[in-house]
Image 1 (tube, rainbow, N blue to C red):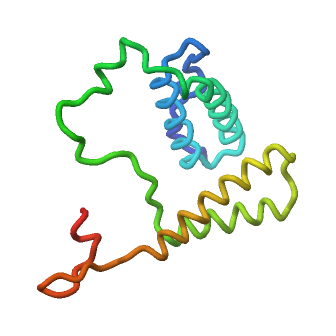
Image 2 (cartoon, rainbow, N blue to C red; image 1 turned 180 degrees about the vertical axis):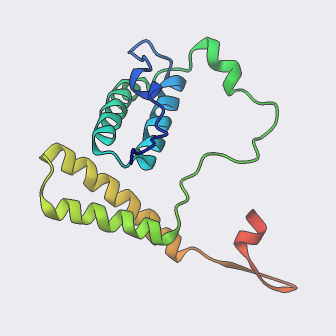
Length: 153
């Protein structure tokens, strides 16, 4: 029985280079990462990781450059947005991320420069995890205790 794949093969042929707009590079990265999660094929996963790595390498040097004039309008609003991008994993998932990174560092399988980056990521994730676990959950009002999440959402 043949396996039916729903992988978008245009991901492997989509052109990008150092001249590609940073917004397009970011979109490519998002699609590569999403498809990577959906794929079960080891060869596809490897190819997606390679494309993601190449795209991230092109994106990194653009982060401190000014927004190109032709994109300023896209990033300009007349009203405050209803939401901004946020990293909001569930506590259990965040704990798994921290544990997996810790185990990866314990394995000593990474080159020292990559291990240093993973240590930095682990530090940021653990701090975020601790802040999340220690964050206030209720607000005392005249009507009693109210969940803060209910007030923010």
